[in-house]
Length: 290
Ligand SMILES: [Mn+2]
Image (cartoon, rainbow, N blue to C red):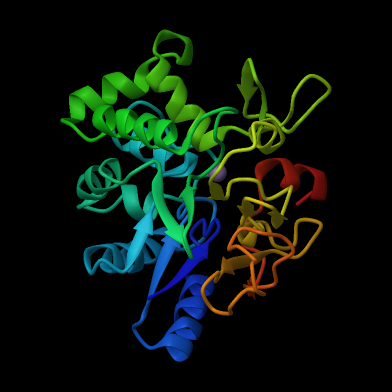
């Protein structure tokens, strides 16, 4: 079965369907979609994207990890926050079965592991701590899931915690929002003078596993030994550059003799360009005078 890893969809269901159609044409039903989180929000059609992925998860033809926008959807559904001006998830949260979607999402993992041609890897939405082994990463992800997937009241209390109150709550944030890190700290900000990119700090420990991730549209496609960052900003199309939905198909072509799945360079990608501009943040509207 071909694994097809997909970066941030963010409600761009037309592009997800275009990718699904291309995969069906190439591989019939012999493929699975690995969704790196942020399937929803900012884009036009969150519910349709969720329905497609849920159908495939239930048929055991998809893996799907939670991103910060799923956590936002869950938190809003549980009454912890209000919808913001730029949110587009009313198509999920305004429906009569909204809480069923919230409960289904709460049971999705934060980390999924696997191996490609013998090379172990994990898929997470945003970032991994420097020095974490694969088994530590998986167990941290499980600890978060235990707190999130129980009864609604327990999940609400967990999500309401401040990050410095509970290391498991902090791990949830780091896995779904992290961009920068040193060995002693992390943040969701773009790298600055103090902290570099999380994957620099992570790679410095010479980890023996690869990472597939998303979350970082401004960085764009990231291909480096051990790393595949797939967020190419489909929903941000037209905001100063073109946006794409990117898929990585590491099993579609054999590597040169001795080459491993996560070695760079790599050209085993499909890209579906966004069919139009979707997202007009409040800030852009002010700048455009529109
Ligand atoms: Mn994200």
